[in-house]
Length: 105
Image (tube, rainbow, N blue to C red):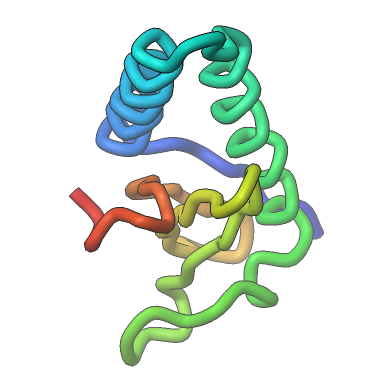
């Protein structure tokens, strides 16, 4: 059984925010890598493919068995995607944050 994976409006905004943050950081660094922001976002999108086949393998958040986090490695740290398994055929990603951020926005 395959799950459809969707990004919420908030999660899409998170991706834009993360892209802008990485881009700004790279622009400010001497010899910054301007391909890094795009590669980071692509790594996040690629990692969410796991949710199509095995969303229950990700760690639970709180008491619900259906709200979980996907940890996404990238560079020295990575990202975390908060998602909900809505039913037996759909997963919605509600938020994405950098692992060094305090919490989801």
